[in-house]
Image (tube, rainbow, N blue to C red):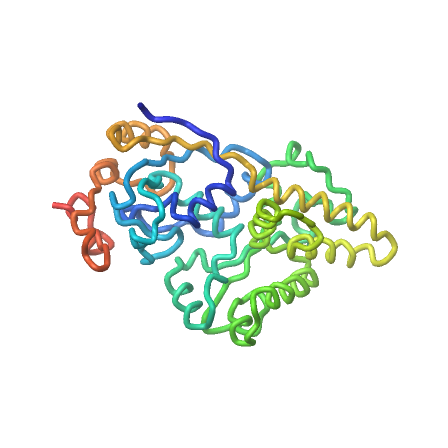
Length: 336
């Protein structure tokens, strides 16, 4: 059959991660990208530049122990996967993890403080953040034309990624401090708010601070895709945009504010429709993944190609599905 190539929308990739159609094999190393790498990728993605290819290996769900993306130890129980075959993410972990955790609210999967603390502790430190677009245009190129509220949907064609990296801002999520800050999910749990009540608070506070929560983008796209009748005005993302624009114009030009909010809303949702270039290798031709991996893997956190291909997880029946006996051990030693 041979390997195949495909174009898959970012939204579909996030959906497949949610449903465990796409999983991260446990032999993959840790997530290591810091703020600079993450903001650089985000800026390139925002101006619709290619961000490289991704390598998937098709195989039965119990071929390798798998873990949740962005987590240190959260391994997936095979019985919780509804598919016999899955795609294992072999190359592109840093990029896919970055985009997924920026556009999706990974912290509100918890129902209480204890669950939040467990998720937070299991999330890599460099991912314990919430990302925003800042509407304070004093220190960066005004990509969305906050000042004049005349956003051009084709602005990306005239923008270099480095020109807008400073437009993105993150706020760090802590377990032991900042509990009274609106951006910290602990505020929700400590005040017994349900998800919508908390998001209403985020809408008010973030728009007041001129910050657009990027974790609202995936939520809005899901509403668009699954709702029979979709009204953008009802989404938390649009409400933030409209409030920011309205604060800027006052009551003098509500139509102008609405048009700007609508254009920016469309652009942000369109970001999730950007295609990622996927190379898929069938299980019976995994040997070809060696050459493919070496060709497409430039930078990033490289695996030993032997480790990558022969990983078979002899100890996958262990109760912890543990492959490595220590963080420094190579998979070659772990399986022999």
